[in-house]
Image 1 (cartoon, rainbow, N blue to C red):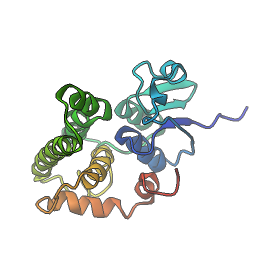
Image 2 (image 1 turned 60 degrees about the vertical axis):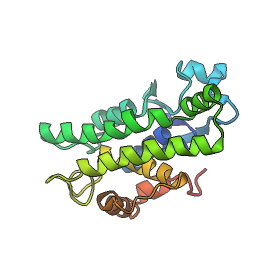
Image 3 (image 1 turned 180 degrees about the vertical axis):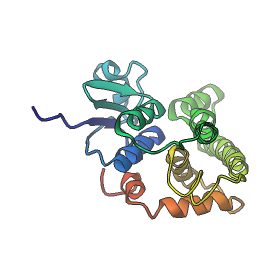
Length: 213
C-alpha cells in the first residue's frame, strides 16, 4: 500500500505554519496543504478542534499521526527523517534551541493574532495601538536576537554555514517585522542571514508571498 501523502493544516501568514513549511521543504517531503482560515474563525470550528484542541495551526498529519506545535513537528522530522537542523554537538544544539526559542517562545506568543486582538478589546485600542504593540515587541525581540548572534558559532546562518532550526524560526519573524515596518538597519547579522535564506528554494517556496497559496 502506498504511503499516504502528509497533510499540512495551514494558514499562509501563520508564523508557526511558515516554520513547518520550510522544514518540510528542506526535508524534501511533499505534502497536501489544507487552508484553515484564521480570519474567518475556521481554527475554532469543531472539525479543526478535533485535529488540535488548542485551535491553532499548524497541524501535520503524517505517519498515521496528527502532530501539533511547530517546534515539536520539526523535531519529529529531525528524528524520523534525519533532517539536519540541529548541530551534532550538545553545546551547539543548546545554542540553536535557545535561538529558536527566543523567537518562538518570547516574541511570537505576545504578537499572536488572538493575544493582540484580546489586548485591543480590553484596552479599547485601535489600529495605531496594535501597530505600536507589534513594533515594540518585535523590535525589542529582534534586537536581543541580533545580540545573541554576536557569537563565534554564527556563520552564514544562525549557527554555522547551513540552515538550521534557528533560521527556520527567524525568517517568519523577519517577515512579520517587514509587515509592521520594523527598522532592521541596526541588525546586520539578521540581514545577512536573511539574504542567505532568500537564496534557498526551501525558504522561498514557503514564503507567504509565494505563489503556492
